[in-house]
Each structure stands twice: as C-alpha cells, then as structure tokens.
Length: 450
Image (cartoon, rainbow, N blue to C red):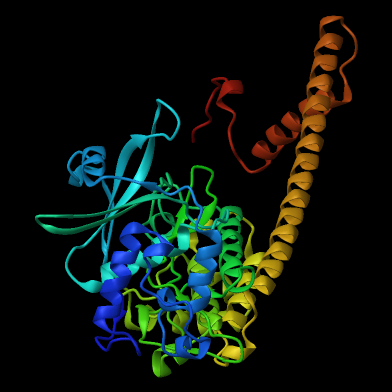
C-alpha cells in the first residue's frame, strides 16, 4: 500500500536551508553544520520546523555523535548487489528499492549479509527520508528498532547516490506473513509476540528518549522480522519530532499510508503521539483477522476492515466470524477478544482517550501471560487424558493375555470370553426370531406337496 503526500511544503522550510542540510549530512560532522546553535528555541519552534531542523535534535546529536556507522563507497555497494540486480531485490517502496547484498564484516575477514536501500534520485522527498534515517538510526539503538550499519553519500556523473545499509531481517516483514497468504501462517502466540515487540518499539520512541519521536507510518510492511521472529520497526523516513514542552501537537503536512493515519491528523494536520496509537490499533485488527485495512477485492461491505469488524466485535457470539480462519484449532478466542478490546481503546475517536504505548505494552504482557497459562492448562488436560487412555489400553491388553493363557491351560473360560459367546448366541437367536435362515445349518429334506 502506497504512502500519500500533500504537495504543499511543510511550514517554515526553504530550499536553500535544505540544501545546506544535505551537505551537512554528507560529511556527518557537526562542525560542518550550517545550523547556528546560538539561535533561540523560539526561533526553532516545533510548530514550524522539520525533525532534522530541531535545536533539541542537533543538541542531542552533538552529545551522541560518536557512533559505529560505516561509510561505504558506491562501487562497493554496487558490487555487493551484483550491479543492483533485480534478482536480489527484496523490497520496493515509494522512496526506492531494497536489495540483499554481501559486505565485509568489520574487523574480520568474513562477510555478512545486509539489506541495501538505494533511494530514488528523482524527487527531494527521498533525500529527506535518507537524512532522517541517518540522523536517527545512527545514534539511537533499541532491540525493537532495525539496526543501521552504514550509509553511502556520493555524487557521480548521474547525480547524487544515497544508500543505506541495514542488518538483514531474514523473515521479511509482518505483511509478507500475515497478508500475503504464506504457506505457513503465523501462530496466535507469535502474533501476540510481534504485537508486543512493535509496541515496545513505539513506547521507546514516544516515552523513553531524550526527545519524543512520532513514527507517522506504522503498518505491517514497516515491521520487520529477524530469524527468531523478533519484530523491529523500520523505515524512519517519515518520522517527526513530537511537540516541544508546553505544546499539544505539531502542525505539519499530512503524510502516511491510507487506512493507517489517524482521522484527526488527516483532517487537521495536527500530529501527536496518539496518531501512532491509532495506527497500532489498526494493525491489531489485522493480526486478529488476517485481512488488510483496505481490500478492494472483497465485497463492498467487507472492503474497509474497521467497518466490517464493528458489528461482530460488539456481539461475543459472532466474534469468531472475524477471526483469521488460519487460526482454527489454536484455541485463541478468549485472548483474541481481549486484543480486540485493546484495539478499540487505541481506535478511540477522542485522541486523548487513547492509551499511551507503555500502557499498551503492559496490557499485551497480561494478555500473553494469560494466554500462555491457558495453553499450559489445556496441554496438561490433554496429557492427563492421554495417560488415562493409555492405562485403559494397557488394562485391555492385560485382560486379553490373561484370557488367552486360561484357554491354553484348560481353565474355565473367563467372564469376558463367556460374555462373548453369549452375545453370539443372542445374535443367532435374534436372526431366527425374525425369520432369517442360517444356510450353514440347513439340510435338504422332503417337501410336502398337494
């Protein structure tokens, strides 16, 4: 699903200042920055400045500029991707293509696989994304944020080359597993874990850093999964710094993905962290149903996910109709209802009524704990039933062996055997009583004729 943008420029930005920031990012040196840090904070009000134009953010970078980002040459990354072969392309978006590649590991003779994102050279929006990603991921680390390994910023005869090198997420994105109808659907336990990981990533951005960051494009395709299915947020090109102290929101151009953006943000352009909470609620319903937020191939009444689920969520007897059919047999209806209740809170029309992401993390932890306890109880019941069946089978085998030994030793028949013979006699008698002929006991005789 593609992102949408207004052509109107964000307030307060000029082309000349942006060009100076591109040159600043090329060297990634604070010394070469054209930003005058002596400016007052009122001159850099978050109501009218971009994330990369924030005084607080530059101050933050000054304190934490020391990082382990590697600088790659364009020729090195071109070789790593075999000339950006389409056979190695693993993703494509509005800002460019992502390729699988192999580069040398630092301080080692071995190689490592990476994901290389080459931004589209046409259009300024791609360069803004490139700047945002380097600025942010270059200095901040968290287990639930994708790791940026390095970058490339070169100019050649064909123009500017802007590339980013990330850790390779071997299980691709949540969208690939949840919405692409993969052969092996995600289990319910795994879905809950992915939701919790993503919630932790957003909680870190909103509440645990020196400044608040609003992700602004939370959706399944931006939730990547490593080899152990740990979820990490990716694609920070649209990220925006939250409101400064004393302010309630950031006024900005509306960007994001149709279906995931909060309604108040789309209508007014006023951005808050609660906009990400709305997007998270949408993704929770995608986890429950296995459907996209917008699906044009379905009947009209089912095309918009949030409208389709509304009557079923309010009726507990019908809730199972919206559950992903691929979850059949997972015994997850109880925890799915609780997850839907959490999603409804995140989708509250009143943004202030939505929970903070730290509260969402705590609620998910409780849901996961209770689901695990329920699964363990069911597993214990099944094991107990298997044990009882096994004992009954053993007793039956012992009884048969005992009867066989008695017959072989000439002892009287056991009650089981006697009952078996009585049963055969009863059946024979019943057949005779209803007029059936036992041809095996029939002998020829005289037939009386008139």
